[in-house]
Image (tube, rainbow, N blue to C red; front, side):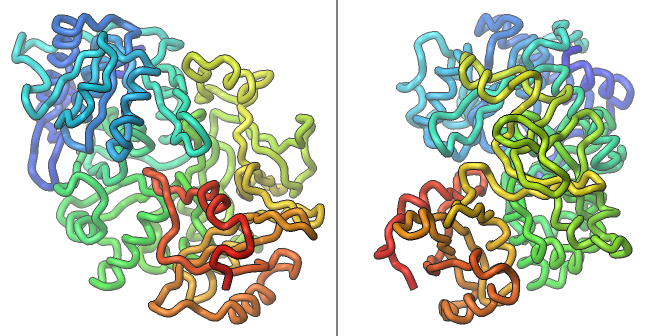
Length: 509
């Protein structure tokens, strides 16, 4: 079934309901939202000769028009290729060419026209409207099958060229249904605020709110501004949003300064990076029972595990702290296993690679059968993440397999060391990496962003670690930096840190 059918059904059921907002200002009702999408689909067919199954890219910042474009692409049976607006224009051009997109929507062309393939049409919303007014009667979307592609999701490409994850209609249906079962209910009076890029996780969560006829809100800033959200949420009411842990940390800082305690917020779904135990405890102390955690990947979008708000707030279970540090249990439509390199299941509590199977798992990588065969084996997605399952099925993430430090023949998981250091009041951010060592093979190095203007003494951090973790896991060196390098999605670039600090004469303290 075509995803655009969900929008059409809601538009016919409640045409005058507010649908798209810029801040507090109404941009379109559901009737207008659906009609604009249908007209965009017609423009793609008539002007750009887009056929069902063709790819159409969007390289734009968040805006109400972004959602209309997504549904317009689906209306004509095409495949959406959303591209993070923070990417360099050459990175975007690579994705457009690799996906063989027939057209790309932008808002300000810049250098892109000179980089596009000759058979890719450019449609610039700064110089022409997204659609041409036409028939005011709402047409039906082009029919699509469950296994047809709907979204080509490009990975962040931190270790090479990004790969196109092929997500089908069935994948996105399963993700949507699992949200209602495992993550959170959605109410018609909700306001989904898109402060994170619509090209990725935040955009994937639009479907639930279209189905329920909720409001879709683009902040006036077009992105994430902690102060703006603290002011906007009470005025909108029933705000739900997806946020990376770094965004929650910034929201918490702004709230502490202003005294904001979460008024108007209903649910913050967090994921997309490590949420450290100290950080979620601080966030719940400030905002209360407003958090749900999900763990997913582009290859199994938003749908591996979930940690519901009851587990996040509960303190009755004897292992509540371990559960809070976990990413929850498998969502209803997937199976999770922890395996050794040979694919055999690890015992309960033992660390191994996380593999998953189920209806949300991608069809494969676009035009990359070798990478597909490496990632999907016997129907199981090998995530590249390391973790362990407890006896109750709660999954605790350790690290990406490539980030594990092997020192003296023993595996050391950076996240465990990072968790310990983040409980020190002088540490704002930290990333732990392995560095070559003639004696140990690798040694543990902590790259620390101080919480104040002065860097803490390395001896004090070392003494703190002694009270938190085993001695052999302690960093052998502390390197102080004003910030950590991050990609466009807020993930720390450990590969860059390993290159920068691979020798002992590189700014050790």
